[in-house]
Image (cartoon, rainbow, N blue to C red; front, side, top):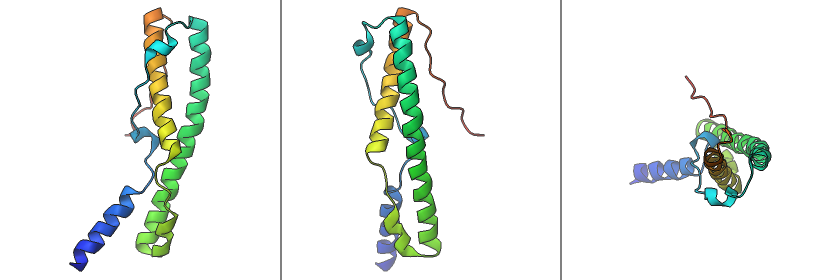
Length: 125
């Protein structure tokens, strides 16, 4: 019985860790909201979204790294550090929404033949 409680406790703690931004999927955003945009307007919006994406993915990845460190320290050295694990929150939700907006802008760009594409992250080898 004690072994099951320990396993369930560790599973709950691991589930509370923040997710790396690469592993967050896009929320659906309708490309219709960009349907009336001209190519210059789409480019401007793409630049704005790209800048915000860099900010929130950096913040999310920082949370994920901090949580991983707290987890490592907690499991090996000092279990009270597990209380400092933040988990996903509004930043993860914003990463998901921004990824959806990027997809919608790309779809609107294809429809208007603007040629706007966001750089995809390279898979690590």
